[in-house]
Length: 174
Image 1 (cartoon, helix red, strand yellow):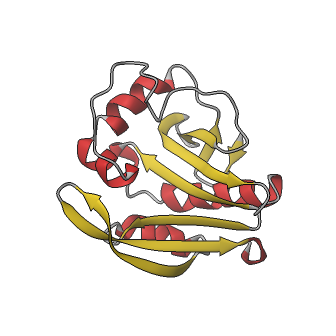
Image 2 (tube, helix red, strand yellow):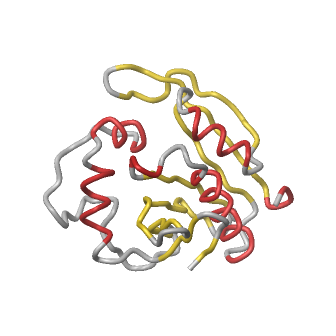
């Protein structure tokens, strides 16, 4: 387990999967905005689910996010596109609706960075988000990320093109 001030990141449990699929994947707007592809319906336990349990991989580390104060499943986080040669990775997260706006995003980003830099020995962590995702932009900045660029109208989301804001953080900034 990886512990922050507000959350714990732990391995996914079978009991987490239906909750995450229902509340996160079931959120058509949220899933469309965070996945970079259109929403699609999933059968329970579908192979295509981002929340299913998978074997450990050198390319991706998936976590369930648990609120420390209540020991309640709060969402999901991922360190993906792990490149052990270039020593870099990307991060992402999604919170259940009841856990949004409570500062968990910043804590999750910090915990993921600590894992990436300290445990995996990576040098650079990146993340990108839609330009109107003010909560994620705030979490990135509070966690020490630098805005590196804006890809104009790079994301097709729910019928419109939107700008994508790119952030990066180096291990030296940890």
